[in-house]
Length: 389
Image 1: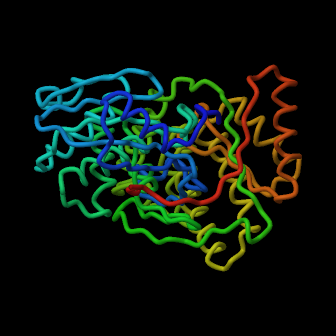
Image 2: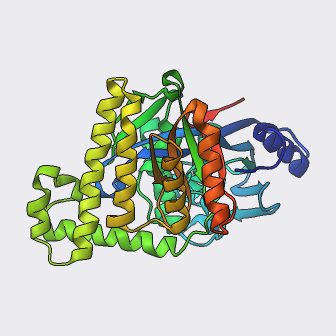
């Protein structure tokens, strides 16, 4: 998980000064997120358990006197400017700028008087790793614009607006989990989110106190057909719910699963349903264990989640499966793919004194298969979006 050198906060501030020959009014940050468990359950009205990462996207910004938005990105080196006509309807700004324009559009569409602004963006959230770099960008921009405009939007309403920016303006069919985690997470906790009513509970999650480490392994595998396959999984789930006569697959319990599967004619659809229903239960079981301070005991649930994603939801790739198998063989208590799938990252729960052994095992397995070398990073549950200064 490499990033430009220097602290990301100072890079954003310096980038603003270099681009605009001025000091920003403030700096706002939003983290990436990793999902401890609960994959592809969010758009099925189910349960998820993410936590925020130490890696952040930082926005330095000030107001403009007109309704224009100028944005500089450290990653691309580009500066773009868009105006009200560009956010009158979705899709007029494309590329990375669409995530910024989408937030402006969503705020305006919700009736907010969004101020013009100058923004500089720096980030150490890896792109394409399934760690919600897009939600981090949207949420940091949202925090900046809310403060600059003195706009009132309670924290519990912010994830839905940021999600709408991504769903409607950008055109990515993501669920509510990413933005909820990025905005609402707390340090030292995982966010237990009911994606139907968007209620949250902050579940204490302190692996360090148990002598454990969460290791995030970036596979560096290129995402393969991720957008189309993600949308296909969502359509399949929605069609299955309709066939079963329920609002969403969340409404099928584990006890009802066999009877539900017997009503579905298509074997692929049955596999998709089985994953979602059992994954929801694994989230509930993980939450129960964490409430009981039994962090070590969640390992088998993580691994079972991966098997389900691999065999029933069919969203893993060889590099991801290799990382999971190597981590488990080197002593990880549990390991699973995290994120939407078809590439991205693996999360492993590891004895702290075994972190290097697990990381080495994964690197060796990749070298043996001539895969691009992975990157392993220990992470701690971190705060959500905030104003820094």
